[in-house]
Length: 378
Image (cartoon, rainbow, N blue to C red; front, side, top):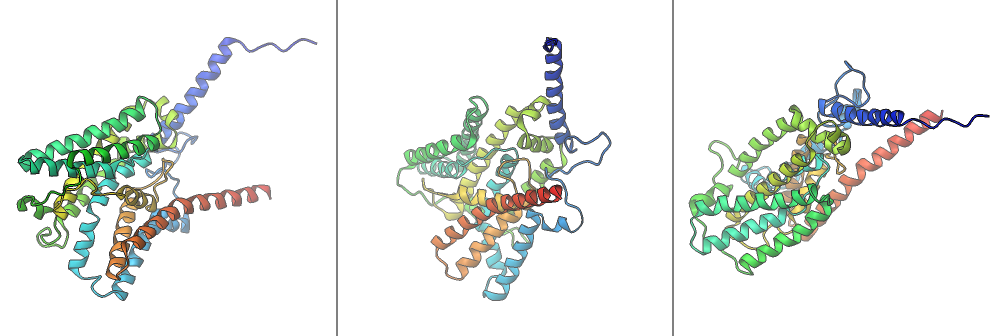
């Protein structure tokens, strides 16, 4: 009996090339908006990275549920709490979530791409501390703002470089820089609090002077403009489809020619820039620069994004869902404040929402998988 003939090197090379080609096709299909493995000319996929449910199933998407819950909470608040539906209170509620909303935009793009930045609140604090120290030293505010923004970009690039060049996990990297940037804020300003910022700038961060003819504060108006822009990029451009491809299968995206490292680096830089800008808004809104400004805000941002249906593992989510999550947490906190609920309880509520937003999709996926297995078995 003859021994089996070993495969030739040419056969090995062909198999490897086929494997690489299949991986590249998977990422290319994701980036182009088609489902992996679908035949040419088949129906395209969707920019949110998830297959669109048919029939009544489209009404139970997680981002849709977040929007419905937001409307329900607002209606309940208007019917049970005096003053909740007042224009002044709604304006104040929007202004209170301005920094969270602004930072949530780049955070959504990061999470879709399978990344995360836990240092954003510390960068906000560093920006605030730097603005206070420079203002106290007699610098012009017109010079302080671009310098703080440049520091934010630099901090984001540090995060991105550690992730993309050294291959470190973003969660570990940004936990480290969370402590680093907060420590730098303490070095810059210490335990001092600096106030008396120019009124000509402070009024732009106050809800008492909204956009003329509306009750919308200027930071919220800026957020709306940026949200529309971010939604267009994420759901209507090749760059957005590349983010979904990276989050779904990074190696395949790289085989498909997507510049994964460069995109990640840009995302972290944008997150740092936005967090630094949010630090300026935060400082002007409260009229006080402190090293501990925004302490713990990163958890609220991440809870908002995940509550809106963005998958923490990457590759799935919508910008609209993230916006709904931000507004939902803002409305809940405002409603609890009007009912004299302590800040400690509000933190607990945010933590519960974070756990629910992470746990519920996983449980739903497990139940769906179990259902399919039972159906296949029968």
